[in-house]
Image (cartoon, rainbow, N blue to C red):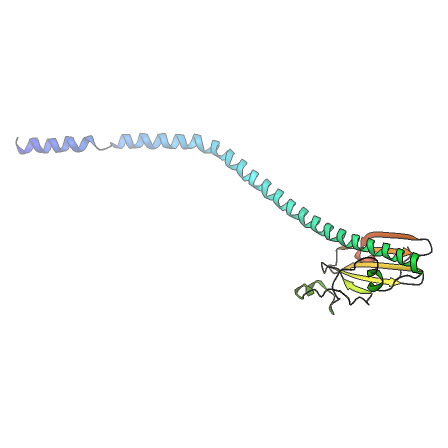
Length: 203
């Protein structure tokens, strides 16, 4: 085999494994046509998935808000139950001993009085301090609720007792409870904190 034949064989071998310019152009055209057809069809599921994600995140945010609202309502309900028991204790005291209670010690004889000693600065920033339980030091008419979010205030006269739960958080609701020994009536309402005056209110 001479040199010219060897060179021809090498050329044939290399041509078998290469692509011509025309073949590359055809492949690129096919890819571009497929891309033009496929992208709009892919766009719809992508938009739908983003919309679904947005909806789920909104649902999550709403449920978070609702859980915060429910927690707030639950805390208020706990304090309301306590105040109801204090008013019933006041009624029992008057029926058995003919006087309206004026301190937590009086109420504690008929129902447990739970809470914390009132801190000097009466605001929500005091939660870092440890709650000092009332225990036997009950000769007081003001204290904090057990969750430290309300100031409980007893205001009494000869015939009437008011118990107020005044929230430390400005926009939260508070509780007004009263017992009138003349009528034997007890009343308890959840009201706006701005309407909770620290003075004797009529039942």
